[in-house]
Amino acid sequence: MRLLLVEDDVALGEGIHQALAREGYTVDWLKDGSRALHALRSEAFDLAVLDLGLPSLDGLEVLKRLRHEGSTLPVLVLTARDSTEDRISGLDAGADDYLIKPFDLNELKARLRALLRRNAGRARLRIEHAGINLDPASQQVAYNGQAVVLTPKEYQLLYELLSPPGRVMTREKLMQLLYGWNEEAESNTLEVHIHNLRKKFCSTLIRTIRGVGYLVEGQP
Ligand code: CA
Image (cartoon, rainbow, N blue to C red; front, top):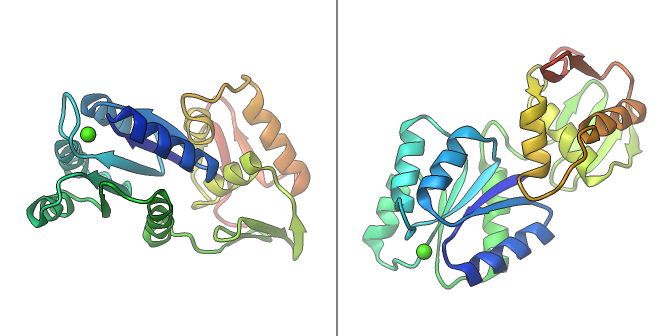
């Protein structure tokens, strides 16, 4: 799960960054609105945590533009603006949820989990495909009824390829979703994970689309 955190308060941002990274998210952190809008337009994220009071472009404006362009990315808004009017304008602008500062990090984590569960299309529902049974709630995976042990990156890669199957996932997008900006990854790391998944499931599960990326066929 790759998450974009947009927060200009360094101390708060560091706290959130650490807490969410520990929770298993790949977290990228930006501190101003224009850069956030650019990143959200050009890169793949599963979720965004967006502060409203931001330098260069207000968080509300970022959200409005994003929604205007048709983005359905789940967004949780952080706001110090404790007035009903501000909360309503945040929700009207397309926020899926909001938290008022100061908040408890455990509450933020719980809200993000709920947001991911609610998010239609990428709902955290059990995925059953080609003999694979993947349960996002427990992160357990079985193949033909037998439990399969995956590393966190293998799990994430399989999850992305199966949500839903039948789409070609580009190398670039998969690398972004798995590693974000901060984690250093070797150039052949994706191939290694794909190789391991083929070994753990079956050699024909994941097709290589030469020069583009990877595909799990829609029809098993
Ligand atoms: Ca702020």
